[in-house]
Length: 274
Image (cartoon, one colour):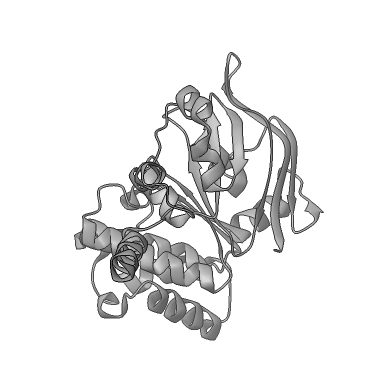
């Protein structure tokens, strides 16, 4: 896997006596699906804001594709273009009068040629299945539709990593499924995806790798099965084992099922062999 972003010994404090991140070292790769878990105040959002350059760490280094970045100036702008961030509330990002104008806002600010702006906007709209919404006012769309617009906003900047903070929050089941399908397509195209979530069932079925934060420190960086097998870690960090993980353990299934469809296929196969 190609290394995109590396944080080394990074720390950040909002106040002198309130450390939000402490001595964080982690590497993120293109094409990898990463879930970030932790209770409220664990440091997940601060981690994202430092990755994207919104916040400047008090100490530590940020390395983008092998290049150590300075904390200000052109390097900070390069970081924001390379590492896209989608906030939990899409209304905090949406500013334009139509979906097409909204998605074109970022590329236009890069002073790109009109042809390149159109290409980026068309591609982002296609990726998030927004073709029928080009001329619609984004503020009047549903929550799920707004979420797709906010992701398309960032995709039009052509980042190499996409960070999403609770992307399925407040979405109904249909829009949640559509979101997962769109994210899967983006992952297959080589985009690195890092999702902060409280949904351990989503993390279990979707992620290849899980980061666990607690009180501003990275407590675990491992594959999902290793993370959810560590009961001491889960208790300490206020997490629970996913439902399918628990069912798989109780039934002695190996490998453990990651999706309901996977479990159904195995049950049908077992029934046919009887």
